[in-house]
Image (cartoon, rainbow, N blue to C red; front, side, top):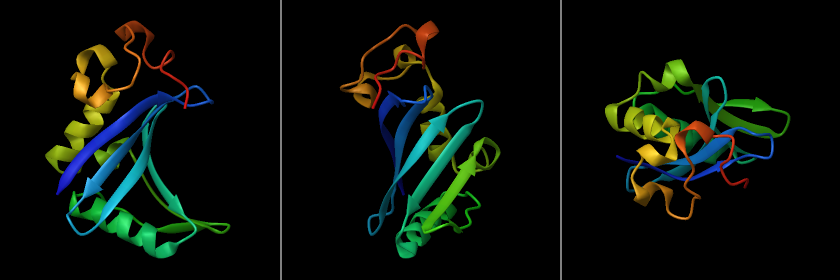
Amino acid sequence: MQVGWVGLRRTEGGCAAARLTLSDGASTAEYNVYLLNDIRLIFQSADRSRVERAAGLLRRVGVDAEVKKMGWVWYVQAYTDILATGREELRKAVADIRRPPDAVGRSQHSGVQRVPAERHPAHLPVG
């Protein structure tokens, strides 16, 4: 199982966000991770089968993931407590996302403006 992340940015709403990627070779899913007062991982689609695959990948890294529906959108989400129970590679990726940009290797922040730790996440690029 491969776990990685890219795209640390600030959303228009002001929170920090990144894309977490899980891949088992046959399937790959990109999840949105939002840093608010907690960590929120969300995958959503109108296609239930895509969300089921994304939930399956989360289960493979030790996260209890349940597919739900709101309106016409299917989704799976996990919060801080649940993510903390996942496998080590997932916990490490989530911890790296939370670290200020100056504390994380440049390869994870390629194309992201480097900012002092005391300004993270408020001054990340919006996108």
